[in-house]
Length: 95
Image 1: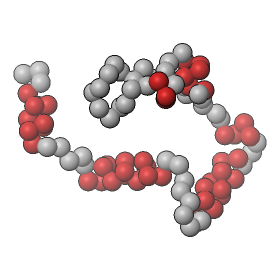
Image 2: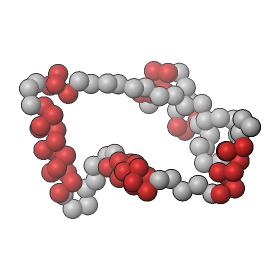
Image 3: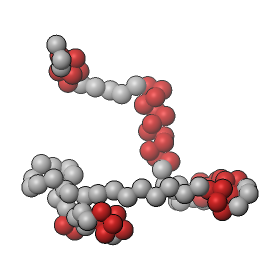
């Protein structure tokens, strides 16, 4: 609600799917809010890290962003699998 309200774009209930080509583009927006963790006082990042460890150690709990980070580390380590046909098409661009 915050992002759509601030940017004047579609709310989720009004947006078309990102997963198929039916209808117009979803028409969603993004709002980025950056917060300096040190604004919460000295040692704030240490306290945040302690809380993250507690969450990770709790059975059944997950820390937001960890799955994405793990996928990124995996792609950096192993590369990104690309279909040979698609790779050939990509390489032919601009020739």
